[in-house]
Amino acid sequence: MRKLIIGILFLLGVTAVSGQLQINLQLPPIGLTVKSQLWNMAVVNTAGMELPVQLILTMTDVTSNEVVFRGQTRTFQLPVGIKQIRMADLLPIFQTDVNPSYPVDNNSEGFLPVGAFRCCFLLRVLEGYKQSDIEECQDIQVEPLSPPVLISPSDNEGIEPAHPQFIWSPPMPYTLFRNLQYDLFVTEVNGSQSAGDAIQRNIPLLHQQNLTSTSFQYPLSIPGLDTGKLYAWQVIAKNNMLPVAKSEAWIFKMQSDVVDTVKQKESGIYYAKLVRDMLGSPIICSGVLHFAYDNEYNQTSAKINIYDITGKNIKQIKLRQDTQSLRYGENLISLDLQRLDGIAYGHFYLLELEASGGGSWYLKFEYKK
Image 1 (tube, rainbow, N blue to C red):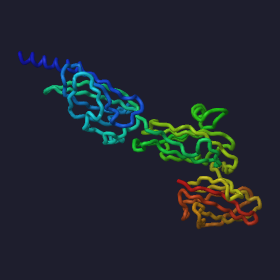
Image 2 (image 1 turned 45 degrees about the vertical axis):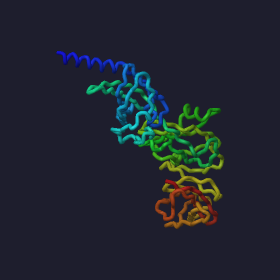
Image 3 (image 1 turned 60 degrees about the vertical axis):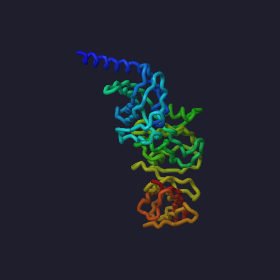
Protein backbone atom coordinates (compact mmCIF):
# COMPACT_ATOMS: atom_id res chain seq x y z
CA MET A 1 0.00 0.00 0.00
CA ARG A 2 2.86 2.33 0.91
CA LYS A 3 4.59 1.59 -2.46
CA LEU A 4 1.36 2.33 -4.32
CA ILE A 5 1.00 5.73 -2.63
CA ILE A 6 4.66 6.60 -3.44
CA GLY A 7 4.10 5.61 -7.08
CA ILE A 8 0.96 7.76 -7.33
CA LEU A 9 2.78 10.73 -5.81
CA PHE A 10 5.63 10.28 -8.30
CA LEU A 11 3.25 10.26 -11.24
CA LEU A 12 1.52 13.34 -9.89
CA GLY A 13 4.91 15.02 -9.68
CA VAL A 14 5.65 14.23 -13.32
CA THR A 15 2.24 15.60 -14.35
CA ALA A 16 2.89 18.72 -12.34
CA VAL A 17 6.26 19.21 -14.03
CA SER A 18 4.77 18.82 -17.50
CA GLY A 19 2.05 21.32 -16.62
CA GLN A 20 4.69 23.87 -15.62
CA LEU A 21 6.56 23.84 -18.93
CA GLN A 22 5.65 25.83 -22.00
CA ILE A 23 7.13 26.05 -25.54
CA ASN A 24 6.86 29.31 -27.46
CA LEU A 25 7.97 28.69 -31.06
CA GLN A 26 9.54 31.64 -32.84
CA LEU A 27 9.25 30.55 -36.46
CA PRO A 28 8.32 33.08 -39.14
CA PRO A 29 5.28 31.70 -41.01
CA ILE A 30 6.85 32.57 -44.38
CA GLY A 31 10.44 32.93 -45.49
CA LEU A 32 12.31 30.12 -43.75
CA THR A 33 15.21 28.79 -45.79
CA VAL A 34 17.74 26.97 -43.54
CA LYS A 35 17.33 24.28 -40.89
CA SER A 36 18.93 26.27 -38.08
CA GLN A 37 15.94 28.67 -38.10
CA LEU A 38 13.61 25.84 -37.04
CA TRP A 39 15.09 25.61 -33.57
CA ASN A 40 14.40 29.20 -32.49
CA MET A 41 12.10 29.10 -29.46
CA ALA A 42 11.64 30.13 -25.85
CA VAL A 43 10.91 27.47 -23.19
CA VAL A 44 9.36 28.48 -19.88
CA ASN A 45 10.16 26.32 -16.82
CA THR A 46 8.11 27.14 -13.70
CA ALA A 47 8.62 23.75 -12.05
CA GLY A 48 10.99 25.22 -9.49
CA MET A 49 13.92 22.98 -10.44
CA GLU A 50 16.33 22.35 -13.28
CA LEU A 51 15.14 19.54 -15.54
CA PRO A 52 16.88 17.15 -17.94
CA VAL A 53 15.08 17.49 -21.29
CA GLN A 54 15.34 16.57 -24.95
CA LEU A 55 13.77 18.19 -28.05
CA ILE A 56 12.41 16.11 -30.93
CA LEU A 57 11.27 17.76 -34.18
CA THR A 58 8.95 16.11 -36.71
CA MET A 59 8.47 17.99 -39.98
CA THR A 60 5.58 16.88 -42.24
CA ASP A 61 4.26 18.03 -45.60
CA VAL A 62 0.94 19.84 -45.07
CA THR A 63 -0.43 18.67 -48.42
CA SER A 64 0.51 14.99 -48.38
CA ASN A 65 0.98 14.52 -44.61
CA GLU A 66 4.26 12.73 -45.36
CA VAL A 67 7.06 12.95 -42.81
CA VAL A 68 9.90 14.97 -44.35
CA PHE A 69 12.44 14.35 -41.60
CA ARG A 70 12.89 14.05 -37.83
CA GLY A 71 15.56 15.71 -35.75
CA GLN A 72 16.54 14.86 -32.18
CA THR A 73 18.80 16.78 -29.79
CA ARG A 74 21.04 15.48 -27.07
CA THR A 75 19.75 15.60 -23.47
CA PHE A 76 20.40 19.01 -21.90
CA GLN A 77 19.54 20.78 -18.63
CA LEU A 78 16.65 23.24 -18.73
CA PRO A 79 17.06 25.93 -16.05
CA VAL A 80 14.25 27.52 -14.08
CA GLY A 81 12.64 30.53 -15.76
CA ILE A 82 12.64 31.48 -19.45
CA LYS A 83 15.28 29.87 -21.63
CA GLN A 84 15.87 31.37 -25.09
CA ILE A 85 17.00 28.52 -27.31
CA ARG A 86 18.99 28.59 -30.55
CA MET A 87 20.30 25.65 -32.53
CA ALA A 88 23.87 26.31 -31.35
CA ASP A 89 22.70 25.52 -27.78
CA LEU A 90 21.44 22.09 -28.83
CA LEU A 91 24.24 20.61 -30.93
CA PRO A 92 24.76 17.89 -31.86
CA ILE A 93 21.35 17.35 -33.47
CA PHE A 94 20.73 13.92 -34.96
CA GLN A 95 18.65 13.78 -38.13
CA THR A 96 16.57 10.63 -38.60
CA ASP A 97 13.83 9.28 -40.91
CA VAL A 98 14.74 11.45 -43.90
CA ASN A 99 12.23 11.09 -46.73
CA PRO A 100 14.10 10.54 -50.04
CA SER A 101 11.36 12.46 -51.88
CA TYR A 102 12.55 15.71 -50.26
CA PRO A 103 16.00 17.30 -50.70
CA VAL A 104 16.93 17.66 -47.01
CA ASP A 105 20.54 18.70 -46.47
CA ASN A 106 22.30 16.76 -43.70
CA ASN A 107 24.29 19.84 -42.76
CA SER A 108 22.92 21.65 -39.69
CA GLU A 109 22.95 24.91 -41.68
CA GLY A 110 21.59 23.21 -44.83
CA PHE A 111 18.64 24.46 -46.83
CA LEU A 112 15.09 23.30 -46.20
CA PRO A 113 12.98 21.91 -49.05
CA VAL A 114 10.50 24.35 -50.56
CA GLY A 115 6.82 23.96 -49.69
CA ALA A 116 4.21 24.13 -46.91
CA PHE A 117 5.09 22.12 -43.78
CA ARG A 118 4.01 21.48 -40.21
CA CYS A 119 6.74 21.51 -37.57
CA CYS A 120 5.90 19.73 -34.31
CA PHE A 121 8.33 19.97 -31.39
CA LEU A 122 8.20 17.47 -28.58
CA LEU A 123 9.86 18.57 -25.32
CA ARG A 124 10.63 15.35 -23.50
CA VAL A 125 11.23 15.67 -19.74
CA LEU A 126 13.40 12.88 -18.33
CA GLU A 127 13.06 12.18 -14.58
CA GLY A 128 14.59 8.96 -13.34
CA TYR A 129 12.88 6.15 -15.21
CA LYS A 130 9.81 8.23 -16.03
CA GLN A 131 9.23 10.81 -18.75
CA SER A 132 6.57 13.29 -19.82
CA ASP A 133 6.09 15.09 -23.14
CA ILE A 134 4.93 18.59 -24.10
CA GLU A 135 4.19 19.22 -27.79
CA GLU A 136 3.81 22.43 -29.80
CA CYS A 137 3.20 22.68 -33.58
CA GLN A 138 3.31 25.46 -36.17
CA ASP A 139 2.76 25.60 -39.95
CA ILE A 140 5.46 27.23 -42.04
CA GLN A 141 5.98 28.14 -45.69
CA VAL A 142 9.50 27.63 -47.05
CA GLU A 143 10.31 29.76 -50.08
CA PRO A 144 13.34 29.83 -52.41
CA LEU A 145 15.92 32.55 -51.93
CA SER A 146 15.13 33.87 -55.40
CA PRO A 147 12.24 33.14 -57.81
CA PRO A 148 12.68 32.31 -61.50
CA VAL A 149 14.39 35.18 -63.34
CA LEU A 150 13.26 36.10 -66.86
CA ILE A 151 16.08 36.43 -69.41
CA SER A 152 14.66 36.79 -72.92
CA PRO A 153 12.73 38.65 -74.24
CA SER A 154 14.05 41.39 -71.95
CA ASP A 155 11.72 43.83 -70.24
CA ASN A 156 10.49 46.48 -72.71
CA GLU A 157 12.52 44.88 -75.50
CA GLY A 158 11.48 45.09 -79.15
CA ILE A 159 11.77 41.70 -80.84
CA GLU A 160 11.43 40.53 -84.44
CA PRO A 161 10.54 36.80 -84.62
CA ALA A 162 6.79 36.25 -84.68
CA HIS A 163 7.40 32.99 -82.82
CA PRO A 164 10.00 34.06 -80.21
CA GLN A 165 11.88 31.86 -77.81
CA PHE A 166 11.34 32.51 -74.08
CA ILE A 167 14.29 31.91 -71.75
CA TRP A 168 14.50 32.13 -67.95
CA SER A 169 16.64 30.87 -65.07
CA PRO A 170 15.40 28.50 -62.30
CA PRO A 171 14.62 29.55 -58.72
CA MET A 172 17.61 29.37 -56.42
CA PRO A 173 19.08 27.43 -54.74
CA TYR A 174 18.29 24.90 -57.47
CA THR A 175 19.15 21.97 -55.16
CA LEU A 176 16.05 22.67 -53.03
CA PHE A 177 13.86 21.03 -55.64
CA ARG A 178 13.34 17.43 -56.66
CA ASN A 179 10.65 17.76 -59.33
CA LEU A 180 10.89 21.28 -60.74
CA GLN A 181 8.49 22.31 -63.52
CA TYR A 182 7.29 25.60 -64.98
CA ASP A 183 4.09 27.20 -66.26
CA LEU A 184 4.61 29.88 -68.93
CA PHE A 185 2.04 32.65 -69.53
CA VAL A 186 2.00 35.02 -72.51
CA THR A 187 -0.80 37.56 -72.94
CA GLU A 188 -1.54 40.77 -74.82
CA VAL A 189 -1.30 44.08 -72.94
CA ASN A 190 -4.34 46.32 -73.39
CA GLY A 191 -4.30 50.11 -73.04
CA SER A 192 -2.40 51.34 -70.02
CA GLN A 193 -2.20 47.97 -68.28
CA SER A 194 0.97 47.01 -66.44
CA ALA A 195 2.56 43.64 -67.15
CA GLY A 196 1.20 42.25 -63.88
CA ASP A 197 -2.33 43.47 -64.59
CA ALA A 198 -2.26 41.93 -68.06
CA ILE A 199 -1.14 38.55 -66.72
CA GLN A 200 -3.85 38.55 -64.02
CA ARG A 201 -6.79 39.96 -66.01
CA ASN A 202 -6.39 38.97 -69.66
CA ILE A 203 -6.98 35.60 -71.27
CA PRO A 204 -3.53 34.19 -72.09
CA LEU A 205 -2.54 33.71 -75.71
CA LEU A 206 -0.23 30.97 -74.49
CA HIS A 207 -0.42 28.96 -71.27
CA GLN A 208 2.17 26.19 -71.44
CA GLN A 209 2.15 23.91 -68.39
CA ASN A 210 4.61 21.53 -66.72
CA LEU A 211 7.69 22.53 -68.70
CA THR A 212 10.88 20.84 -67.50
CA SER A 213 13.26 23.08 -69.46
CA THR A 214 14.05 26.75 -68.80
CA SER A 215 13.26 27.75 -72.38
CA PHE A 216 10.31 27.45 -74.73
CA GLN A 217 9.65 28.59 -78.28
CA TYR A 218 6.30 30.09 -79.15
CA PRO A 219 4.77 27.23 -81.21
CA LEU A 220 5.07 27.45 -84.98
CA SER A 221 1.75 25.59 -85.18
CA ILE A 222 -0.22 28.66 -84.04
CA PRO A 223 -0.37 32.20 -85.52
CA GLY A 224 2.60 34.40 -84.70
CA LEU A 225 2.49 37.49 -82.53
CA ASP A 226 1.33 40.71 -84.19
CA THR A 227 3.57 43.60 -85.17
CA GLY A 228 3.33 46.73 -83.04
CA LYS A 229 1.48 45.11 -80.14
CA LEU A 230 2.60 44.84 -76.53
CA TYR A 231 2.78 41.47 -74.79
CA ALA A 232 3.44 40.40 -71.21
CA TRP A 233 4.99 37.13 -70.02
CA GLN A 234 5.61 35.41 -66.70
CA VAL A 235 6.88 32.06 -65.42
CA ILE A 236 5.62 30.17 -62.35
CA ALA A 237 7.90 27.51 -60.84
CA LYS A 238 6.35 24.37 -59.35
CA ASN A 239 7.87 21.67 -57.18
CA ASN A 240 6.06 18.32 -57.08
CA MET A 241 3.25 20.01 -59.09
CA LEU A 242 2.71 22.71 -56.43
CA PRO A 243 3.53 26.41 -57.12
CA VAL A 244 6.55 27.61 -55.14
CA ALA A 245 7.63 30.90 -56.77
CA LYS A 246 6.76 33.19 -59.63
CA SER A 247 8.93 35.49 -61.71
CA GLU A 248 8.32 39.15 -62.38
CA ALA A 249 6.03 39.94 -65.29
CA TRP A 250 7.82 41.57 -68.23
CA ILE A 251 6.61 43.40 -71.34
CA PHE A 252 7.97 43.07 -74.87
CA LYS A 253 6.93 44.56 -78.23
CA MET A 254 6.84 43.05 -81.70
CA GLN A 255 8.91 45.05 -84.18
CA SER A 256 7.93 45.52 -87.80
CA ASP A 257 10.39 43.26 -89.64
CA VAL A 258 9.00 39.93 -88.46
CA VAL A 259 9.39 36.71 -90.42
CA ASP A 260 6.35 36.21 -92.65
CA THR A 261 4.76 32.77 -92.60
CA VAL A 262 2.28 30.71 -94.62
CA LYS A 263 0.02 28.16 -92.94
CA GLN A 264 -0.78 24.85 -94.64
CA LYS A 265 -4.47 24.17 -94.07
CA GLU A 266 -4.23 20.38 -94.10
CA SER A 267 -1.50 20.02 -91.48
CA GLY A 268 -1.67 23.37 -89.69
CA ILE A 269 2.12 23.77 -90.12
CA TYR A 270 3.56 27.26 -90.60
CA TYR A 271 6.14 27.75 -93.36
CA ALA A 272 8.57 30.67 -93.15
CA LYS A 273 8.70 32.70 -96.34
CA LEU A 274 12.07 33.11 -98.06
CA VAL A 275 13.27 36.70 -98.44
CA ARG A 276 15.71 38.50 -100.70
CA ASP A 277 17.83 39.84 -97.83
CA MET A 278 20.29 37.35 -96.32
CA LEU A 279 20.41 39.53 -93.18
CA GLY A 280 16.74 38.93 -92.38
CA SER A 281 15.39 37.92 -88.97
CA PRO A 282 16.11 34.30 -87.91
CA ILE A 283 13.58 31.68 -86.93
CA ILE A 284 13.99 28.77 -84.52
CA CYS A 285 14.09 25.26 -85.98
CA SER A 286 14.17 21.98 -84.03
CA GLY A 287 14.24 19.11 -86.48
CA VAL A 288 12.36 19.82 -89.72
CA LEU A 289 12.77 23.18 -91.45
CA HIS A 290 9.56 24.37 -93.13
CA PHE A 291 9.87 27.18 -95.69
CA ALA A 292 7.82 28.69 -98.52
CA TYR A 293 8.95 29.98 -101.92
CA ASP A 294 6.71 31.87 -104.36
CA ASN A 295 7.71 30.61 -107.81
CA GLU A 296 6.33 33.52 -109.81
CA TYR A 297 8.74 32.93 -112.74
CA ASN A 298 7.63 29.30 -113.18
CA GLN A 299 11.05 27.70 -112.72
CA THR A 300 11.08 23.91 -112.81
CA SER A 301 13.73 23.50 -110.10
CA ALA A 302 16.08 25.35 -107.79
CA LYS A 303 19.32 24.60 -105.98
CA ILE A 304 19.35 24.68 -102.17
CA ASN A 305 22.44 25.54 -100.12
CA ILE A 306 22.82 25.67 -96.33
CA TYR A 307 25.69 27.50 -94.60
CA ASP A 308 26.77 27.43 -90.96
CA ILE A 309 27.27 31.13 -90.10
CA THR A 310 27.87 30.73 -86.37
CA GLY A 311 31.60 31.45 -86.30
CA LYS A 312 33.91 33.71 -88.22
CA ASN A 313 34.40 31.11 -90.96
CA ILE A 314 31.30 30.24 -92.99
CA LYS A 315 30.96 26.50 -93.59
CA GLN A 316 28.72 24.89 -96.19
CA ILE A 317 26.62 21.91 -95.09
CA LYS A 318 26.54 19.02 -97.54
CA LEU A 319 22.99 18.06 -98.52
CA ARG A 320 21.91 14.60 -99.61
CA GLN A 321 19.91 16.22 -102.40
CA ASP A 322 20.51 19.87 -103.22
CA THR A 323 17.99 20.23 -106.06
CA GLN A 324 14.35 20.98 -105.33
CA SER A 325 11.59 20.48 -107.94
CA LEU A 326 9.21 23.44 -108.20
CA ARG A 327 5.74 24.14 -109.50
CA TYR A 328 4.26 27.46 -110.45
CA GLY A 329 3.07 29.61 -107.54
CA GLU A 330 3.59 28.94 -103.89
CA ASN A 331 5.81 25.96 -102.94
CA LEU A 332 5.75 24.64 -99.37
CA ILE A 333 9.00 22.77 -98.72
CA SER A 334 10.10 20.71 -95.70
CA LEU A 335 13.74 19.78 -95.12
CA ASP A 336 14.63 17.22 -92.43
CA LEU A 337 17.79 18.61 -90.82
CA GLN A 338 18.13 15.67 -88.45
CA ARG A 339 19.43 13.56 -91.32
CA LEU A 340 22.22 15.98 -92.25
CA ASP A 341 25.81 15.73 -91.07
CA GLY A 342 27.27 18.90 -89.61
CA ILE A 343 24.05 20.35 -88.16
CA ALA A 344 24.66 21.27 -84.50
CA TYR A 345 22.34 22.51 -81.77
CA GLY A 346 22.71 26.19 -80.93
CA HIS A 347 24.28 27.12 -84.29
CA PHE A 348 22.94 29.68 -86.75
CA TYR A 349 22.46 28.75 -90.40
CA LEU A 350 21.58 30.47 -93.68
CA LEU A 351 19.47 28.65 -96.26
CA GLU A 352 19.86 29.86 -99.84
CA LEU A 353 17.50 28.91 -102.67
CA GLU A 354 19.05 29.61 -106.09
CA ALA A 355 16.30 29.82 -108.70
CA SER A 356 17.33 30.16 -112.34
CA GLY A 357 16.06 33.53 -113.52
CA GLY A 358 14.64 34.29 -110.08
CA GLY A 359 17.86 35.07 -108.22
CA SER A 360 18.64 33.90 -104.68
CA TRP A 361 16.24 33.78 -101.75
CA TYR A 362 17.22 33.31 -98.12
CA LEU A 363 16.09 32.13 -94.68
CA LYS A 364 18.18 32.45 -91.54
CA PHE A 365 17.50 29.99 -88.70
CA GLU A 366 18.87 28.76 -85.38
CA TYR A 367 18.87 25.02 -84.80
CA LYS A 368 17.76 24.16 -81.24
CA LYS A 369 16.41 21.19 -79.33
